[in-house]
Image 1: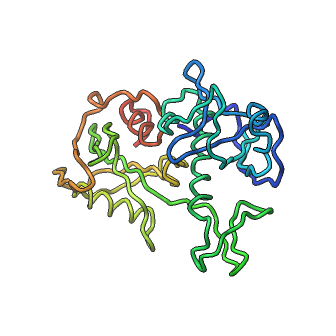
Image 2: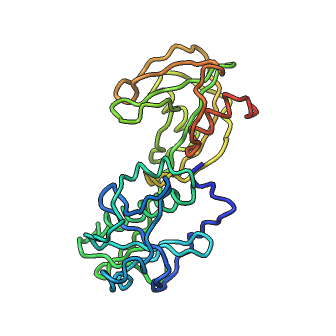
Length: 279
């Protein structure tokens, strides 16, 4: 999956430190990221790459994280017009074969959205400031504190014998097979979320839920929890057409082979297809 970057190690500990010329930075404009593409690889800029034209870029850079001994910073300055660098769509993170490159980019994008979305205090409306001690924004006026948003979500592989329930989303560009998924609501356990989402989206009941694995999914500020769940009763699908365009039972040998296993959904589908998961 996209966070599986071994032997490289992702360190998310906050550091209050100034950027150095050799450090890398991430710059975003909406849903694009600044890169140099070389042989289908994502290359992020270092401050030294931009030092001649933008010598003060390091001054307001925000430390993000490091992978091994490489420090990554966030830069919000616009119009970084250095030859050889360009903004490309963040969908590029889904196709980068070196996961550590895509993971760095998408986690930086998640943090960038958090900083942008909380420039002002939601309690009193005054500007917020970044803490020098931890990854937190605070309001000097009223003292309100804001931490990065992480939303819990379940991924549910509903199975019946050798069949797996696969779906396709309604009204999205993404048209590959997916599993039942949904966010946990207020006052709801993950198990209750599974029952509710499966019932709402396809009209089915499930039992014998088995936790598989979790995954951070920075694309949507989400922490995914993957479960396999056995069909309980009738297998007739009643589709919520506002959420899904398709719901279908497929035999193991009918399930498409996963091309890139960046997501928990893809890994769970592939594990069922190959029979490598013990159910």
